[in-house]
Each structure stands twice: as C-alpha cells, then as structure tokens.
Length: 566
Image (cartoon, rainbow, N blue to C red; front, side, top):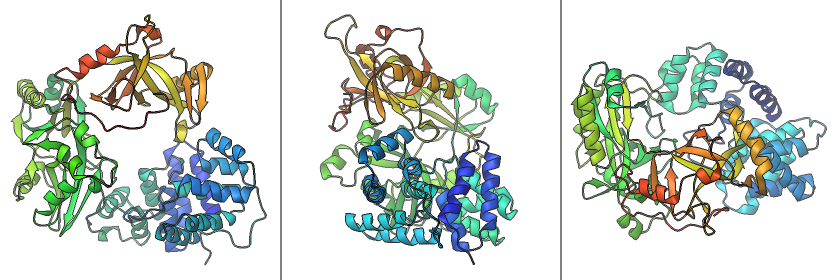
C-alpha cells in the first residue's frame, strides 16, 4: 500500500493556496483526503494541512527555531548566507525562500513520506539538545529533492502553511471526501477537539460515537456589539434578558477533572502557567466541569486596572512579589460541562442555576434582568461606575453556540475618543499580506510641532481597519517615504496621519511617550491632515485620566528593552 508523500501533500496544498474560493479549496482537499489509503496518513495530512506539528490535543512542541532550520539548510544549500537571509525577508518566510533557492534533484526511488516526518517530529520533541535537533532537521531536509518539498517541510515546522485553509475548510473537505453531513463533522469536532480524529470517524461513518472530552479548548460564544442602550433595547425586542458587567480582563475557559486544571485563552492557548493562584482556587472546587468566564486583576473584592494582569502574561516564572502585587481571580459566567453531562444545548437559565450551585468560593458575575432602554442604561452606568468595560445582555433561553455571534448575546461598551496619529514605521505583514506594508507604528507629538524640542513619540501599532486597496496604496507611499530598512520594517518619514480607535490607554515603558493604546485599530486614513495636525501627548494623558478610561491608577508595565524606533 503506497504511503502519502510530502511532495504530493505540497502540490495539493499549492493548488489550494492558488484559489481564493473556499469551495474550491475544500474540493481540492476533499479529493485528496478521499484518495489516501492509510489511516495514519489521513491523520497526518489533515494535521499538517491545518498547520499543526502534533495533534491538537497533544501538548508537545517541536522546539525548533528559525536558527536551527537556517543552519541546517545553509549547510545543504552551500550558498552565501546573505542571499538566503535576503530572500527570506523578500518572501516573508523561510519556506517560500527555500522554494526559490532549493536545487531540483532527480526524484529518489522513495520520496519523503508524511509518516517519516511524524517520526522525526517525535524525536525533535523528545530532545532539548540544540545539536541533536539540528541533526534531525538536517536529515529531513536532505531527503527533499523537489523545491516544494523543502518549502512545505519548513511551513509545517513553523506551523504556518499560508494556504488560506482554516478549520472550517478542513471540516467541509472531510464532509465532501466521505459524504457526511457537515453539521455532524462540526459536532464531533466540538466533542473531541481533534480534527484528525474526526476525519477517521468520518471515514468509518462513526461520527455519532464521538463523546465529549475535557482538556481541549472549544470556541467561545460571542456577543453582537450594540452602539447604544436604545439599539440594544431594539435588538432584544422587548424580551427580558440577563444583564451582567462586561469585565475588563482575559476571556478564559477553565477545564477541571480531579486535581488537573487547565486554562485556555480566547486564542485557544494554554495560560494556566501564568495564573497559579487561579488554578489553586479552582482545584478546591469539587467535581469535573468546564467553565467560561474572565480572569481579572482582583483585590479586596474589586477589579483592578488591566495592566496588573498584563504583567503576568507570557511568564513561566512568577515571583511571590509579582503574585502579591498583581493578584488575579477567575470570575465565571457560564458552565458548559458538569460531571459527565454536556450542557451547551441547555438554556442559559438552567446553566446559570448549575453554575451557582458550585461551592468553595467560586466567583460569578451578578445577573440583573432588563427589558427596556432605561433598564439597560441604568445597568450600563452601574457597570461603568464599577470600572468595568461595559455590559453584556443574554437571552435566558439561549443555548451556548461556540464561535458564533447572533441575536442571543449582545454587548454594549464604553467609547473613548479617537486619536489622530502619525505613522513612523511600516512593517511587512504575514500570510496574504506578506508582500505589502500592512502593520503601522504610530505616534503623537510631545509638544507643539513648531517647537524645536517637540518630537513624535510612539503610542502603538495597528494593522486592522484598512482595506486591501488602501494597504496597496499605503505600501507604495511608504516605500517612497522610507528612511531606512531594518529587516521587515521600514522607518518612514512622518507624513501620513491615521485616525486610531482603541479600547483603553495604559501607562507603558515600552514606548517613548510613556503610554500605549490597547487594542488599537485604524478607523480611517486622514489624507486631509498634515503631520502637524496630529494629536498631542497632552490629549493622550487627558483621555488616560478620564473616568471612562479603565487603566487609571498609575499601574505601569514592567521595564522592557526599547523598540527599534523608540
């Protein structure tokens, strides 16, 4: 029985990448999956097409850096390293650079197979020794005879295929490959959290056997934004909804069974290492469950400024001092699984009753009932006065719909004024934006522009809010305005003004301004404004100190190395 090869995988995924049509992508992949004979190969083809080195429920990591790959391939290519690095920057990734630099060799009698890559990945995960890892990577690339093999081996290692294939496309491809209902594919994925295992069940016509398992993240149910209390009242149509404060923290999903507690963020990443105090508090609650809620900075029964919690993220070693000065708590607002019973199809009012019966000090949001614009406005003002981010309205009869917005949950947030900022640097993006300058660092004036001592000081970086056509236009402009290039980044003459919206202003030592915008996004390009028309630092401070800005309190981020343009 022939085994699935890397070359075949590469050529199929090139076909998928070449079309923007999701229907065509799923048809290409569906035909490919159907033709795979060996079940292990099907698992690996689905896994690698999704950009994973290991199964989604497997917590191992390759631990392979760009330096390891670069050293290994340079030893094989035997070219001037400057050519390799320049090509990687121009292509935006190592994989596509190898596609240009890799010499085509006569095809070997036995092509590199997907299962051989999986075996090498097991070895990579099992060793932490740099030279051992480099030797394994070298051996893998030495088996690549076609440039696209080298390209996709690098893409799989770095977990970024850039083919436009996401989980939804993979699910639809499976449904098409094995003639199964898409809804059953999606339900099995929700139950198992492992799309390659779902592929096997689809192939065996056994999707109905999928049973829910803890310790894999499921997508979060989302709320639809509303601009005002009147809009929200119109949306709920006179019905009676639950209202709860929208907390300013980190949306989190807590899984617990026995002594094991795992926390996932909205990006599906594990974050329990950053919150040992939260883990310990959850461990004291009896039974097994899956909770949805928010991790917030918390002290003496009050939510603290968000910057407290930000200091913990990404840190594996938390000192007692850091934990004491930046306390955190998990506040639950939903329960999705309890002692063997999946609850997502139960109405919210039943889930809340089950949630509130959990013991041992679990914090939960407070629910009030609203049905009119006046009710919503009062609840909103109370949330704002408690320094919370806004209000969430929920239909008491709503099931939990993972990953979806609809007419069952709504959110109403406070609004801060926008800022006009000057772009000081433009950076090449990733994926479909890898060839254009799509990420912009921006600044405000620390004095009056005419004053000799006045300078532009950075306050943030944004990449969302502009169209592809606008990005293409800005790329052309910024290349002409470029003062210097540092890798992917162009320092540009300060000529272009962007209107920036944001959720919050925080104190920050990462920017020369001393402040940073949280969740900035581009509202529009102010072609009508000159650089000197941009906002002043005094305006940033004024907003920071306003009652509507929840980063008040003088909390500072930890000291950090200055960025390239600070």
